[in-house]
Image (cartoon, rainbow, N blue to C red; front, side):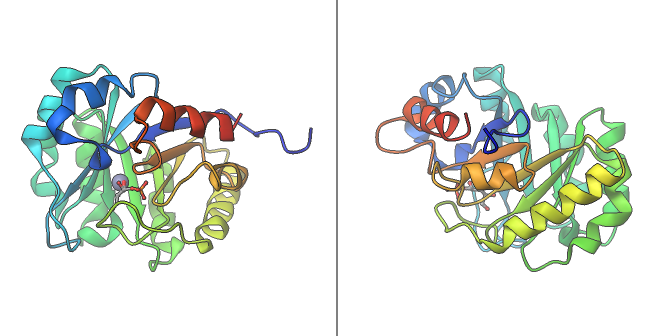
Length: 222
Ligand code: DX5
Ligand code: ZN
C-alpha cells in the first residue's frame, strides 16, 4: 500500500495536558508511550508559566519513561544542569531563547543528555542549519508555543518536508519531532511529511483518559 507509514514513529504525550491532582496515575496511563514530554515555561520566553524542576523530579520518580524536556525559557543555559540533575533524559532548547545557542547545545552534550533544538513557526529554518550535525533531535513547533490545545499550523508540513530533505541528504538519523495541535486526524500526514516523533497533549489526555487517547493516535499511524 503506497500509504504505508514510512518509518517507526515515537509518541510523546505532553504532561502539560494531564490532571495534576492525579499526577502519578496520569504518568502510569502513558507507560505504553515512548517518551514523556515535559513543557517548561517561564512567562518570559512564552506568555505563560507552566511548571519547573520539582514537577520534573516527581515525574522522574514516578515513571521509567524517557523524560523529553522542552525548555521554553530565556537563556536556558542558566538551568541546563539543574534540569539534567532533576531527571531529564533529553533537553530541547529554542534557537530564539539565547544568543549563544551553540554553547547551550555543547552544554547539553557535556551533561550526557540527548540534545534537542527547536524554533518557533515564524523563525526561518536556516537558523538550524549550522547546528544540524551537533544534535540528536530537531523539534518543529506547529503552533506558537505557550499553550496546549491550539490548532496545528498547516505550513508546518512544508517545514517538515524541507528538514526531512536536509537530513536525508546528509545521511542524518536525528529524531524529527513535531509539537502542537497533533491529532489522530492529522498524524498520518505529519508522519508522511517526515516526522519520527509526535508530541500530543490534548489529543492524549482527553475526557476518556490517556490510554484511549494514545491508542487512537497509534491507530491513526498504523
Ligand atoms: C506548547 C507545548 C506543547 C503542548 C502541546 O507550547 O510545547 O507541548 O503541550 O499541546 P497540544 O497537543 O494540546 O497542542
Ligand atoms: Zn512542548
